[in-house]
Image 1 (spheres, rainbow, N blue to C red):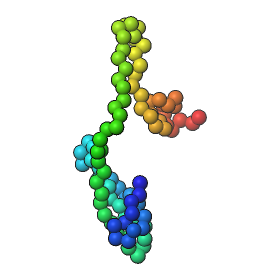
Image 2 (image 1 turned 30 degrees about the horizontal axis):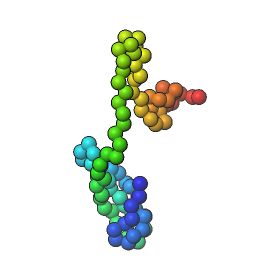
Image 3 (image 1 turned 90 degrees about the horizontal axis):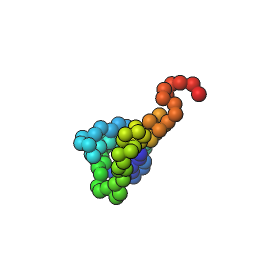
Length: 90
C-alpha cells in the first residue's frame, strides 16, 4: 500500500506495520523522494461492515453423517489449496 507524502506529495511506501487493536493497524511510511525522505505513521481501521457473510446451518442428517462443511481460508496456501506443504514441488 502507498500513500502520498504529507510534506512533498510524492508516493510514500510502507516500511512496516503493527496491529494496535483487532481492527486498528498502525503503518510506518517513508517518502520515495530522496530529497524529502519524510517518515510518518498512519492509522488504518475498520469503519463499518458493509455485508456480513452468511453462516450455513448444518442439518441433523449432515451432522450425523459427518458431511458438515469445514471452514476454509483463501490464499495461496490456505486450506482451500490442494497443496498442503508450500515447499513441496508440483
